Amino acid sequence: MTNTTKLLAPAALGPLTLPNRLLMAPLTRNRAEADGTPTPLMAEYYAQRASAGLIIAEAATPNAVGQTYPNITAVHTPRHVAGWRLVTDAVREAGGRMFLQLQHGGRVGHPATSGLTPVAPSPVPLPETIFTPDGHRPAVVPREMTAEDIRTTVADFARAARNAMDAGFEGVEVHSANGHLLHQFLARNTNRRTDGYGGSIAGRIRFTAEVTEAVAAEIGAERVGLRVSPGNTVNGIAEGETEEIYPALADRLGGLGLAYLHLVFADPDSPVFGKIRAGWPGTLVANPVLREMSGPAIEQASARLLDAGADLIALGRPFLANPDLVTRLRLGAPLNQVRDRYLMYVGGATGYTDYPTLAQAGAAAQPSSDSIVAFDGPRVA
Image 1 (spheres, rainbow, N blue to C red):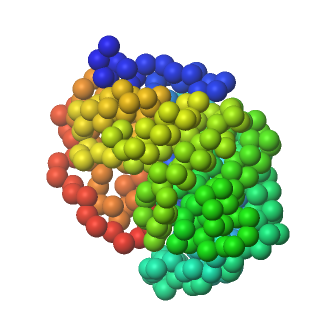
Image 2 (image 1 turned 120 degrees about the horizontal axis):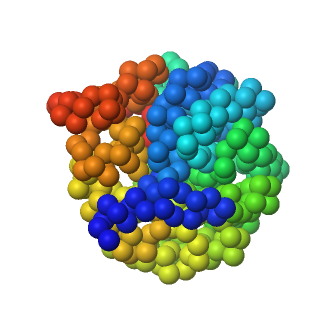
Image 3 (image 1 turned 135 degrees about the vertical axis):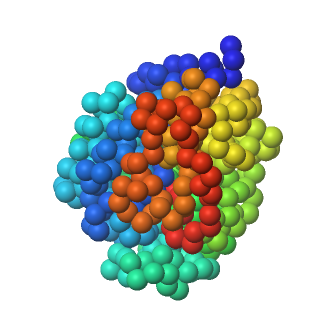
């Protein structure tokens, strides 16, 4: 079996049968309405990419205080649910399947965006500016979460998961990665608590575990994934004890029967990857680091991860620029390159729904030399 054949072979995921092992990773795109309601343009965008084995939709906040950047999606009001239903209906009509990522920003938020003071495990501000409707502004000191705040937030995640199912999703992904609230509890530099949610490794993994357990109890563990990013320093994170934290978290949650565990920037040569794979009894989704946007690069990185024990591969920017990525890989066709990264976050169809498929542009008519340039706006989820 060739690398491409293996990547495009069907796979089981909980109650789902996926047509291939390629998942579309969650990507923040800032195309929602100001209140977090998904738009018809978003339905078009996701339906274009319905050939992915599974689409994991971009981060949606479970409550108002969890909002990170402007025009981020949410899933805590009936209007949000109705907006997401337009998206899931469009994707299902195109033959696709979707999970929704649930993300609380924690200290990655600003009153200028949400109208609320951010909350976090400890009053440690983001060590950089943050993008708001008024441009970049200095981060504020977050309010340390009380025990009641923690209980309420756990319940908000469970309620958001139920809302996602009502909106037509097949399941949800709990986001405990990339420097957002759950990751802030895992990291020593952002979690300075002295109660049962801080200090020891058991204390620091407790919040992520309780959120995941509550979501699983609400909609069924087989419809819940968990995303983590071991060692990732984005948004000012310094975990400490990375090689101990994630095996401990996997051990606590391994018996739940979750749909999957999703590793960001997965490195098959990393000791953490090996420890997690050895201890995780279920499906492991790996998001590789790609040095270039090409079919051979995707196949090589994916093959290394599949050989090391990953079950499914999640890709972000290749799906962003190639709505028909699965077809291009199957045919060995060249890939569209990501255009100016500024277009990732500014709203509108340009750089969003206007990437051509092979059928539209022809195999020879690829975007020529658009470069990936620096942009200091919001980060990918």
